[in-house]
Image 1 (cartoon, rainbow, N blue to C red):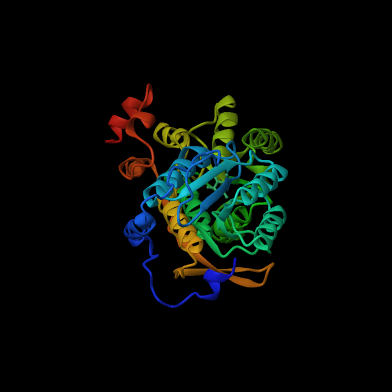
Image 2 (image 1 turned 90 degrees about the horizontal axis):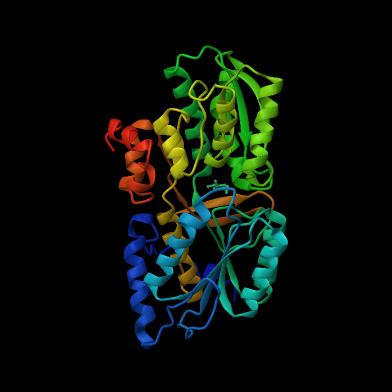
Length: 380
Ligand code: BGC
């Protein structure tokens, strides 16, 4: 059963190209309403509600601390997509605990979800969840992070190597603009158990390595942050700076890690003199960019990601074929996973307003207190 959609995948284009996602959701919603009593009420706890024609869709998010995005963007945007389609859903968060994720998955399967979306905490535990789901006839989707050696029917994410390239290019741009000569660059990488962190690093190292090699930049400390833990990132960066006080640029893999580095730089009176990168366009990061403490962030339009994932989940639940525009190779499972990969965007001081215009964060959130004047200056 879990293979049904893949087995019947046709070359027919069903409009999964992102621009058409909204329209497809509308079609799906109309289909769901056919029986007149679709149970579109699903909520965070999987309670009650009548069963819709597509059954219930389960989502397990990874944690709420490694990035603001999971609870402030992914959850509400997935909810909105499922509600718009009139399907029942249950979204839970594993709070950084892989055992907890397995328990939630088991409960969701027992409660009758027909499709399960997970953002794994590591590929091993993700693959185990997917195997168990498959054995129960429950199809799975890798949401944002690919499960290496897993069995998900689809993978929905961004072009994560491109995310890293934007970070590398952004850091170089800021180094140039600040007139820094041969700066020592520190790299604060994401979780070693997150395949995305590997892809981000692949992207930024493809930009930085040649510049280390030709002496434009000097390679400094380079370390991964377990579970993207922001607190540990602060400790790690503090140690980096103690060992190498002349670090003058920081490639941080997301805004949480970047913020931790900025806090340390602030204590050393170095904030604003050392460009720092990020990812996720969090409110804090956008404020740090306006304040000149952060060089750039990478904006990923999570609405498109949530919409694409919801549409695929619904297609799977209905046993309908869906054509995806991309495939990603899983080297561990040695298979190509049908995928939707969205385009990330680099954000600097001059286009912070684009993130607000896109509706990802509000002007009120970013332009509070001391940031009001900076927003005015930036024309936001
Ligand atoms: C996501 C990033 C996020 C990080 C930490 C990655 O897999 O793609 O958006 O910042 O995990 O949660």
